[in-house]
Image (cartoon, rainbow, N blue to C red; front, top):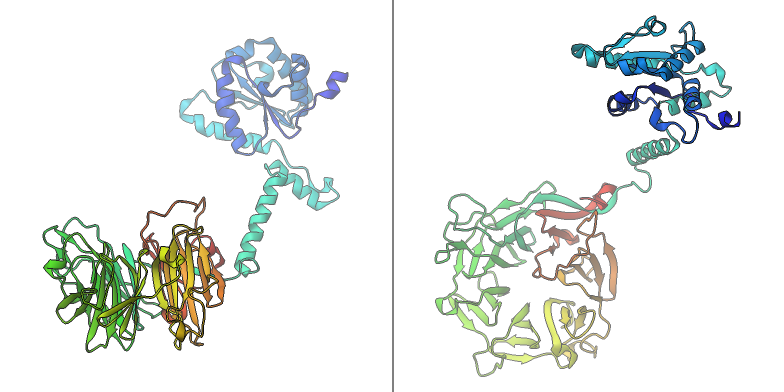
Length: 553
């Protein structure tokens, strides 16, 4: 008696009785079909270990709602199975509860006590699937739900019904959580309200440099074409207005303007410049062919100052600065491997060739900044230099600054000769620093040079820096590092951290040191709001957007 009390099977389940010869069909085909329809199944594989065979089968038949008998010659010949059939008939002699559900799997003589019941015959291959489906429906109908009157609490009845259909507390919790998530999202209740996010706009492939003319944006790309294209194709120059619905458009470029015939390739666009008073005139520096110009805000380009043959060779052009006036522009051009030129009219003159200028040989300029008629040159560990006419002088006197690479220069004040510089010191960690410079101390009210407290320090490369006057008159700077972190500040330090430019679902901690400056993130300033483009081919603007764009743009 003790053994009998300890064995108890699920009263909502269906027991399958089959002979060992039919185990593959019962376990691999019938059982999965029943469980897929939401029926709980017990077979000989689930019987309690250690108990007698007779007790196990007796409790399985008595405790479960129905028993499916898989008829075959082996099942009919087994005396144990006859015992099971007798027990089922004894429990439901009039078959009102349909305790026994016979199914004929293989032709055999059906015992009379079972033949009186409706048998699902699966031996006819043409009707196999339809009759198997009928058997599934028989099982589903054979476990009728208890009437709601049997439960004092109607919610308890609903929960019992849900459990009978396969629901579990965990599944119910997941469904409720999903419904709550959708409801909060539709109602835009915290934390699903609109956020300040980077919004993906149209595509711009291959971008490496952008420029704000004041009336719109222009962009240049690095080329990877195998030959010089002809006809109306994208050659790496594009333009865009500030209109909300504006998109990037390819500029019209003559076939031979950017073509390097000896290499049968297109030259890259490396820098832009323009006068605020004449935004329709845009000057673009190419890597190997000199300067090209657009007179219509970037819609089309033509040649302006070709690089002379004596300056060509294994020294690509890298930097461009603009001074003078729209009527008489003066260009400053630096080479990637050294050299600095002043370009006026058709003349390319090497800076530093005069007696009043002692620039180092092969000075490698990393940044240029025009201050009136003067040029400030930040070099790669060769100092900060001021070019004024034919004279030049070194501005940095602090010993630590002689280790610096001046990666970016910009004006920090309208009333004083003060600059913001992005520098790299390979002997310090973190290496990258944003500092305030006052190279002419008489104009800076005795402010030490360089400014003693950096505005920002970081260990990752800065891919782009934007310094711009705010409408209030203050100077605002925005920078993006190699992992997509964007910060904004003023002369007092950091004032705002922006969401990351790149969204990563797995990990963003990858080494991006191999990317050249400006390759990954580029910042421009249309109407004093940062705008960025990332190398996945999308152009992003910052503004209000749906909350999920914090995760994916």
